[in-house]
Amino acid sequence: MATDKLFFDLLVGESLVDELAGLGFSGACVGGNELNAPKDFQLLCSKVVSDPVQNNARNALSANDLVYFELADDVSNRKASECWEVDAFIVSADFVKNYRPLRKPVLDFVSLKNMGERGIAIIIPVSLLLESTGFFRANTLNCFKRLVRLAGKAKVDVVLASGAKEKYGIRSPKDLMAVGVALGIPANVVVKTVSNNPLKIVNRAESRTDPNVILRGLTVLEWGDQKPVDKKRLWGFY
Image 1 (cartoon, one colour):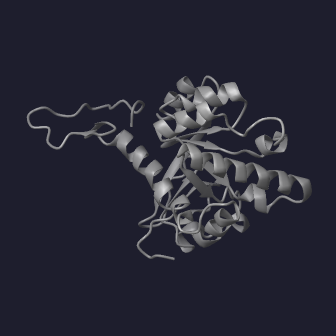
Image 2: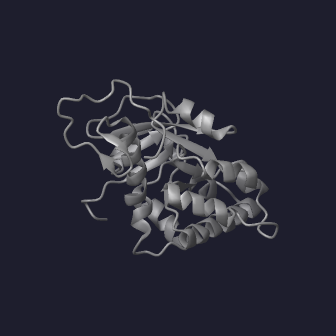
Image 3: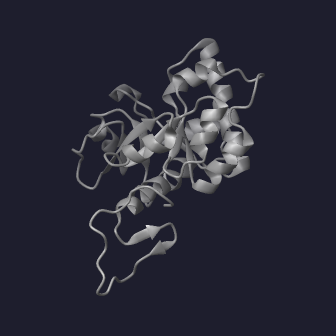
């Protein structure tokens, strides 16, 4: 494993930060407002939103760094894919449980295209696969493989996360990458699923709070006599 890479777990339970730092992660995102983190460890908090997605996402950004949306029906997925405030789609246990490969695709192409244009990633929690058995494991594997294949065609970033709720479910970056290879991600690019791709999301969260970043691609180098606004709008084109 390259030592110059920064590794992130963007879907993990609270109170597991110390264990993640010991496994070589540089940062993590928890589903709460836990702020205690080891030195040189970047900790973010996230909120999962539902319909109405845009209003809930904007409200969530006032107290959270990232906004997630759980994969749902086609109409809800389409609405969420059009929302600039959503950072990533996540795969839930309920979605996998109800997934039937012969009925319809995991995500329609329009939603995938919207996600690619807006930089919305797909977070795959490997705990759903590793902690399942029998038919549910086979169905989960099928669902994840199709998501990876569709995301590759639509140029949507895939992020592998542990999805751990307790310390025994945490996986190291190498373990996550090994699962990624099993899902069909080429070995020469699978490292991006735990480093480059999550780093894009982390940088996006930082851009929202950076007073010098007006919007994506437009940054103030020097304010001069004019000062930045005291309270910056956190939602929009970042």
